Image 1: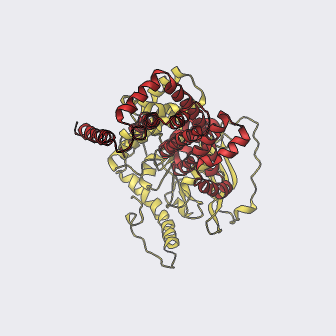
Image 2 (image 1 turned 60 degrees about the vertical axis):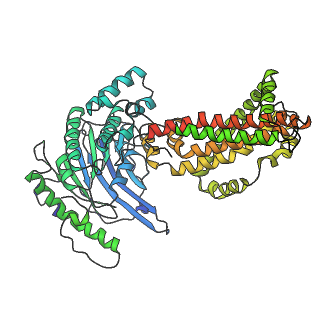
Image 3 (image 1 turned 180 degrees about the vertical axis):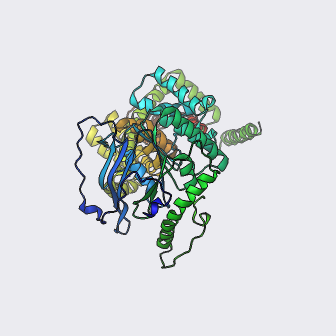
Length: 315
Length: 252
């Protein structure tokens, strides 16, 4: 298998079966009642398909039979060319959208809609500008119906965790981009989710801020032991952070290959080993980017892509 | 300071011109009263409590009517914004209904509710409901989708989602519509009150006409404008300032 050129074991079966259109597949029955055995994955995606109708009435398959298992406490990064449906996949896991077929399982149980056990962190932070930083962090706990004293204590705790203790009474517009993402992380953690879903959370930040936030996220992950599914188009970022990198294909999004990353932590974006691992993933990613460009130019022109920079992939 | 000076000069000039025209006695004083006469009418009106009662009655009505409009308008607007069928059918109807002056509902209101306060309230609601509905519909569409998603993700559902997320998130987009709705409500109220014995400001104004007391008429007109000014300047400006402070929007 070309995905496995660097001799890491592939932990999960890759979808290699014959392509079947989404319509013909029904949801698979899954037993719900029994308690999850100890080796049950935290998040399980089983045969997730998503198709939708375009403006022109054409039926488009966005995600095609995604099968993925994420262990408790694992940090999984999903990379792929833009338009491969990686953000959409996070929305499905969060329960904010409904897949066409297949199931999202958390602790072995199929999810029904949004739930505070899975919190999504958006690229554009999604913080509420009408609330202060503290009230934002408090929001999920307030919806849960937690008492005021408990909410205040936890708000202070999580704001300190992201080093924003002094900004409790500030409004969102008064913070920098990096601070906003840290508030978003604190707000997500405050609801004490099992799974953090991060949708290119650092893509809009400058390089220095991003480096700092990588360190902070790794530290928080170590301290809280949460399961993290992290979507990015930046391969090096994926290797910097992830226990495993999952590569999605372009339209329809399928899992092309998986790369376990067993480099020692903490890693750095500039590490030679990180760059070398990124190179291998990029070789595969480039095929997909070429395909995506072909579709976008849509005129039979086959652009020959040499560097990641040309296609918006940061090496 | 400069602004205050310009303000003062403008109003001093206006009053000067008014006094001059009145003192020249081109028209008889009962048709063209002096500012002094209007001031006296105001004083007398407040002295015998007529104006206090009128203001209280009118304010009460406009508050009830406007509140009904806001609640109904928000429900309608949200419904229209989130339902394609409603948007295509009712959306267009509401826009065309906006060209109808609210007082056109008066005859129907009289037949439906009788000659009482409910008929007035109905006209007030019909006057302001459309602005609020259209503002809410528009605000719901302009509001970034991310807020609704983040709210649902953090566990807000149903009424909580509306109250804690949708409403505050759309407020900057609907505030001007709410303001317009208030102005329409206030105007519809005064018009409706002029049409029958209603105790409100509108009726006191007509009473001035019946008594040929133009000082009283102008005094009430001044009151109507002043109340509109205060509500706009205190309540809506205050909300605007609060929003700008929180969202970090620059003052328009």
